[in-house]
Length: 229
Length: 222
Image (tube, rainbow over all chains, first blue to last red; front, side, top):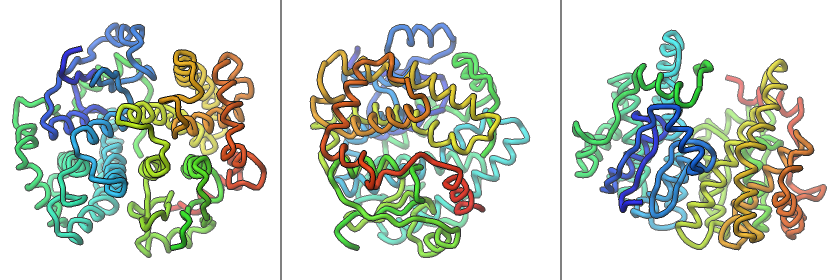
């Protein structure tokens, strides 16, 4: 295993994208192996490197880590993006839990029928503007600091920026009622590592398209219908 | 707020049960508030007590915590059930997340339509037997220790114990191919705090029944 972290996933966002964001935010270079065929996936399975037979899988520090949350927690802690004590970690975990739920609604989006996509788009926007964004807007307003937790850049900030951008892709003016979040978005986007990640040519993946959906279905033999929320 | 953590949820397992298990395993006494009506739930939301308008809610150490995983991680960290370093924590996190995926299938089961129940039960059995239990069987066999991680009792052991019992309720002979897990189950059952939690009269909740499903649908009706 080389020094760098190595990511095993499809060539697309999915469950791996928050991990790419966090590594990039931490200024950590990583390699990627993209699953394109069923054979590649079966080879990984047979090789025993997927603990629960699933991706994402990240080779890091001599471990073959699976489970997105476990991977994110490890990276956050290793690179000091997890607060200074248990209570700050609790806040970060709560906030990241919220943004994870919100991004979960978007994760399934490309796999929906055209009709369900419209319904889901409305659902995503409704949840973002009535349940999630108001929470972070208030947190930032109440303490007046630049970052969500402990006046220090953390995983929670990276995760929230990722969620904001993803919802904006579904409705471009979704931040119009959230001045704190607008300022937050500008601030966090200008952090050097994040700025770099947002530039063309970075390892950030584009909005998933039909080709991505086809690849996932083919590799995982996941041909059942996915329903909207 | 009294000294004890206070749990707000329905009077049933759901997403709160792993939290009850972990607190009990850590020997921590707690209080519970049960949601029985939609009005109670709407009031909690109106009072601004639920960060994302959802339960579980655990009031602990001056915080109003939501998000099951956040709560479990905090309890594990506070009561030294999270390993001794980052790498042990990574292992524990991987194991509990895998088990949570299995438990999610069991969580949703009572809410599946009658014509899907048999298929879903078959899926639970298949996943437990082919994907999850073999992993932990192998981990225990390879290091030969009593506990999953670092030769020390941790959150991962509690979570696995809960999952074994939950699957056994649905698939009674599920451990028949897993001798290590059978031994593990016996050992965990004999740990004083867990033994106490498994006795009648403990805060452990029974398997969900029709009344529980009805209450969930009523309280969370839109």
